[in-house]
Image (cartoon, rainbow, N blue to C red; front, side, top):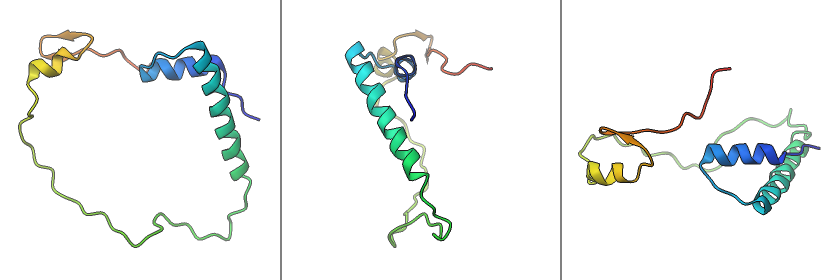
Length: 99
């Protein structure tokens, strides 16, 4: 049985930029643990005789060319939403560290 710790939930919340209460931390720990345990049960199913597939309908994607065009949002408006900025750039906290 997989159990997601409260510390792991707090770490996920920090990476996501979310502020969650202790009550929510406990709730999410239980919920994510239940989800992982369910997936673990699904992994036990023998699918050796099942042909792999990626599409369950006959729908196809319709692609379009990317077209570069000026933004409708003014630079000042965009930067005003940044918690930190320098010159014309947003400053964000690093999320990954080298091991």
